Structure formats: structure tokens, C-alpha cells
Length: 312
Image (cartoon, rainbow, N blue to C red):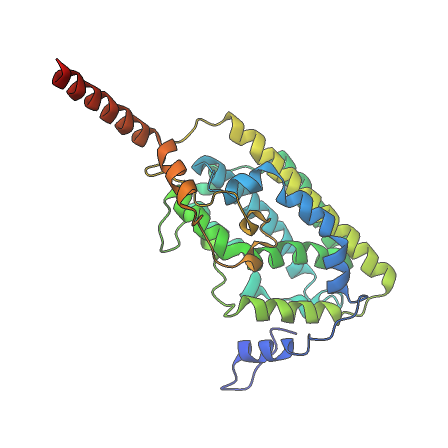
């Protein structure tokens, strides 16, 4: 198990990552491969939800980001409650990484930043999130062998795209670069995300599961994606009712072109590019800003006045 007692002087993360080196040869029937192939269509649908596309372009309102953080809090509170309940279950025990992965404490910090110390009195679980939470609790109580599907869907996605999404949120909402409001995306106890994901997949593949159970896990992972998409759609509808926020220097952090528009579960593979390098797109983005348009119009008016005076 990940939390084994270590001898004095041993480095736990080094030991964990060493184990990941065994994850080079995979079989099509390994759980990690079945999940990768079996959820491809769900990935494609998730990346095309309007909320995700707008988020990655930096079109995220502060109030909507707060609601998204709230949804994550209720989701991870349920998930990690059930993980704790089943941490010794043979179908999940090898994947128990509370120090490295658990997000509830980080989300509490983010909610405290956005809502204040009395944040619990100011938030509520939305309808779509409630359905997601109920499913997680059902799995934890009735079918714990399927819990890996929800852990895989959430944690692997967070590790893949977390740093990119963090930067998008910080730039679009002018959040502090020191991490306030985006603690959810910080995995302080994971020194190398790629190696940790390899380790996690190796542990998944080593679970003693029959083919029928593996198929049920893939089916449950697709349900997890569906629940996430329902939350995204709910947020998108709420966002349409919110008053447009004027951000100082509100330039888009990405122009929507290229691989970065991929969903959070894949965006981490696309590199750290954050903005369009195209001068045309940059100029167009600048010109779309209301302040720039006003200054441009004022300049034209002034120039016209000078020309008229000169021609008199």
C-alpha cells in the first residue's frame, strides 16, 4: 500500500516512482488501457462542452468559477469519504494515496478565499452535483469495486491539466500568483505528475479483477464523465444568467486554436503554451477591448478635427 511504514531515512516518493518504471509493457486487457480506450468518446464530448471550451479560452466569470469550485468541493468530499471507507478494500487499497491526491482540504482553502470564514453558510450543492454525489455514495456503500472509476476520472484529469487550468484561472480572474483561490490545482506532494500517473496506472493494472468487473469499471467511468458533463452544462446555463464582468486588461488567455482547447483530462499532454503567438490574433484581441476601442475612436475624432482645421 502507498502509506506503508518506511524505514528511517527512506524517501517515500522515490520508492513510489521507482515502482512506476515497471509500467512500460501494457496489455490491451489491462484496466488502464481498457479505461483509456473505453472512455475516448466521453473525452470528446467533455472537451466540447461550452463551459470547458470557454474556460480554456479564459472566458470565465468570477462568480461562475466560485460555483464550479463549490461543485468540486461537494464532489471530492463525497469521493474522499468513500475512499476512506474503502481504503482497505482489495479492489481499491493499492490506489489509496491521500497525501498525494486528496483535494478536499485544498478546496476548503479556496472556498475560504472566495467566501470568507463562514463559507459553509454561503454555499449549497447544486442539483447536478447532488446527483453525482449520490452516485459516488451508492458506489462506496454498494459496489466499492467500482470506486476506482470515479477516482481515475477525477484525479488523473486533475494531474493532467491542473497546472494549465490554474494559469488560465489566475490570468482570467486576476487571482494571486501565490495560489490563493487555486489551491485545488496544486499537488504539493507529487513531484512528477507524469511518473505518478504511470505509478497509478501500474497499480490499477495490478488489481485482481476479472474481465466482467473491468467492463463494469469502464462503464462506471463513462457514467462519471456524464455526471461531470451535466455539472458543466448546469454551470454554463447559470453563467448565461450572470452579469458580464469587466476585467482590467481582459484579454483572452488563449485564442481557441490548437491543442490547448482539449478537455482538462488531456490538456496536460499539450505542453505549457498559454497564449496565441499570432500577432493578428493578439492585435484583434486588443482591439476588441472596450477601452482600446474608445481610445481609437477618440484618436480618429481628434485627427479629423485637426484635418478640418488645417483645411479651413
